[in-house]
Length: 331
Image: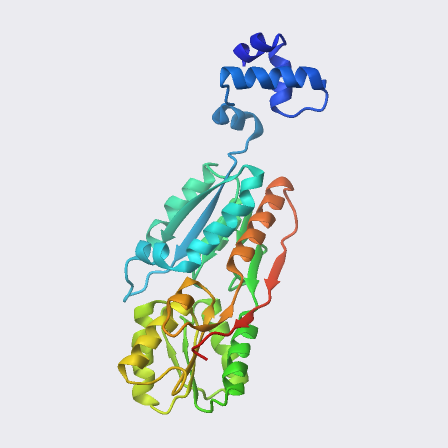
């Protein structure tokens, strides 16, 4: 800053006012300082500035997953499931104009204490939290820290924290209505884990529209899980002609199972997924699916978090997006 001040012929304090966009600096002096900054290659010391502003200009995207006995690699699922990539992209795009950086922090129950310590130490200004299980203690732990936070779905229990979600039950009802409108009469569903609110809500919504006795298999939101669950359904209910699968990844696996059994899609069995992710387009045939606008939802989460950071004590708010059906070849 001393070098910039000397090059511009002004005081160090004037340079500071220009860097911090103070309105009291005359336009000519501001131009001179900015030219000097360009000439000297000066870049503000972020660490030093954070000591004054008490801001890190970073927020954490914490992805908390439960331990499951038949689990595949935790990190492998996080970095291959299109959902997490879409959340990261949507949040990053919304944070960029605020010059705020996103730090991705995957965690399971074995290292929650490390994540809590990291957040308590002030490395980030706030948290975007994806928590999959209703038994996950992390949302309450983050709230207890007093750090600004926004959840990526409705919390399983009462918690005074902002969240963004899609109307999960409505999406599943739309899936049932679409299958029934096609003339399907023997419906079934592959659900996600029921300790995840989205898994339970999608099953409840589908059964509310298709009938409480509709056969259901519980799976884990993975391709392999969807394939295995579809084989079990077909073993027990070979007359299925309409199948709602509660994620596109599971639907991709279910389509493999149907093809292995010689069942034509949609001729013999119409299949509809949930998410409208890249997996839906990779399916053969391309997957009809319930769309949740994940990028827009993540951007809304980021905007809510910035508002909480800028206005401490702001009341919690929930934002619910509306799902739609995207019709392709599978149903």
